[in-house]
Amino acid sequence: MEERAWRIAGGAALLDGALRRADLALAEGLVAEAAPDARLLDARGLLVLPGLVDIHGDAHERSLQPRPGIGFPVDLALRDTATQLLGCGITTAYLGVTLSWEPGLRSLETWRLLMAALDAARPGLAPDLRVHLRFEADNLDALDDALADIAAGRVHLLGFNDHTPSIVRKLGSEKEVAKYAGRAGMAPAEFRVLAERVAARRGEVPAARERLAAAARAAGLPMLSHDDASLEDRAHYRGHGARICEFPMAEAVAADARVHGEAVVMGAPNVVRGGSHLGWASAAPLAERGLVTVLASDYHWPALLEAPFAMARRGRMDLAAAWALVSANPAAAAGLGDRGALRPGLRGDVVVVDPAGPSVVAVFSAGRLAQLTAAGAARLG
Image (cartoon, rainbow, N blue to C red; front, top):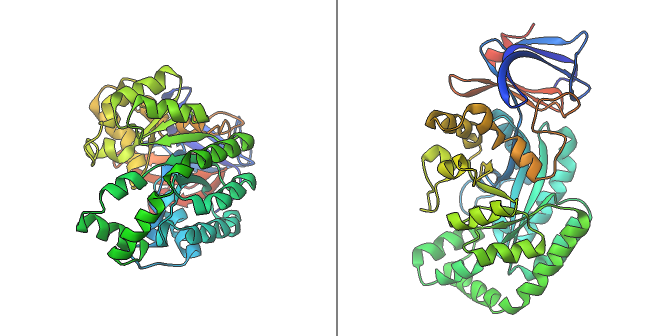
């Protein structure tokens, strides 16, 4: 990373909602009116765009556990994660960290290790790594840790997950149980016993959920609900203060959230692939109708850069409007008023993109050059 003033010259910059040829200055970590004695990056023929803001990405799990039961040190996984994020133009990443009752990858032990590793690693990492706590509703034994970490400022976004009922319904399937057991590092029979024991405490979930919501409200954290299947689900979580609707399972749920002025999140992979891999709603047409306002990388970081270009190719939304889905809108939903646009005084998060790919040429994070390809290096002045 290189800290100095920069002038990104001659590119098509996204300014005030439109792409136009303009120079962009970065100084003291911010977008600036001008930058005397700045180093030059020649951006002619390239796009100069606000850095991507990823409100939910859990691809870091593959750096932690690339195969079921095969784990790697958390500090190594975070370094790998940061490198991948920058390569995809993501300057602000909410790591979707699932805190579940399952042992292994999503366990309380892994959560603790990851929180400690993030505390240690952040000063040396270029992207702004934040924590999207995906708290599994039935994980009652981890509630005190979650509450303490919210109070300590280690959590930046609270998501309400409720996957246990669907897991329990699949306990009769050898294939499904093997998948969950492999991720947890358990024998299938052991996993069944554990899941049934956890489900037996279901009556304690509402009180625990209210404690989490109260802690998030006290800390000023944005909250979201995940996989809302019905209007009743959305109303329930809205009552707790969750003003972001993530991955609604029906169009009516997304429409209801928008009527209430709430952000609606769907996956960028859904857009890139042309539909949901689970057979749910298709994100692109909903975004074109204003029912989806934010795209997230979900399980595949490269999709976040590709998705706005895929939206533009559909011909119903230009690139400037589509880019808001992956930068300005997620920043606003997460309460980050200091980024998501290229305006003087805002954080100097910039991605320089070759539209022919599209591919990342250079990334600036908080005004520092954080990523540069060989093609980008040839453009330095």
